[in-house]
Length: 203
Length: 309
Image (cartoon, rainbow over all chains, first blue to last red):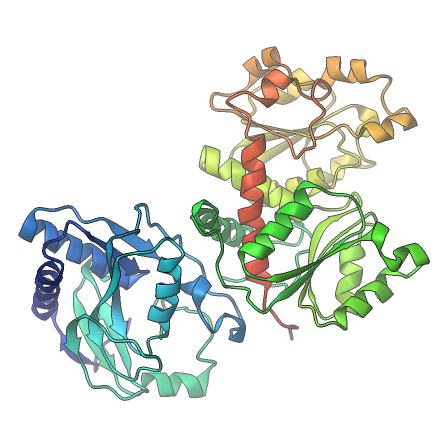
């Protein structure tokens, strides 16, 4: 994949620090991790949720359950697309009732993905709270949603594309920006078309 | 990966990639049925007509539940309580209902090709829920889904379809789907219940049950349509049971981990004994549960697909 000429905003060390800090903040705010469960949005949100769980294990020696959530069935643009997105399997093998759910995603942009995820989680039960952890907050919200834990805030233009690469999926830990990428894409093809590159086409 | 057509008329036209996409998507939907709230908002605003010109319990209820679990609005049409009684044609019936703004039609009809006919005179996405003795694609998809879930694969398995091959649309859809995904398919039944030119399916054909099931992984047992017995296609129910009935001792011939399937409704003691139907290797009720996931996947993948070209 061509990734040269892009602007790196978080390197491997920066990403590790951000995940460590988010993990500490989660423990602090929830007085430990006994009541905490993590739910990561497929795909890279789920990867980051697993990383936070590893970190929580290292810090507090506690095993925090991790669930994987596919939000495509809850999208608000399903009928605007030519082809349906591929549905991955949601795996939430624990009870969310009365737990503090930490919803994890890689990039927070318009907030529409998070809106979909909130609806999905509530279909599994009534948690005590849902808190939002994101590696990157890039702004441009279209819904009243704010994160509780942020790895890094990055000022972007609406046309920029923020790409997250994680060790377990991409063999490298890195976050970078392609300036103007979404604008180019809109003009050349339908930007709601299917996902050929394996990117998380979430908004 | 995507489906090429905006309709599901049969499995004969589908490629291995398309079949796998449907089965994989069904795998993801299977989990929704186990949730406390068995409903997702995906097809909100989509209206689906269930157009059943022939009786059905399993398929109709399964489609209706699948539609409701995806939050679609559904209308049930049954022939006997409609203006079909007054002589309204299929085309007029559908065009009138379509004028009420529907998006998808699930159709069962006694005439082969009725679903195709509907694609020519309406704008809705059409899903075949059984047309005469032509195809019943969602039944075969749920059969394949159940096999894949239990045995982990389809490729290289030996699947024997037993019973009334001639009248069975389930058999036809199974043949196409299983062959495309690499299973070895055999048919077994009395020669009077074999279709004309059966050899053209390109599968093994047996009239001797023990030879057919020797070394099989899956037995899919078709219902003997007792209503057709009047035509005298086999001498007696008792003779059929002796020659083709699946009994406990005949299962010795199968491979380890074999499974027994039946699309229902089961004639206990005719094509299968109660002992076998209720045994641990029988997946008959799993087929029913899986059917919902498969139908949800099909509805999801076809919904919103507009006219091509």
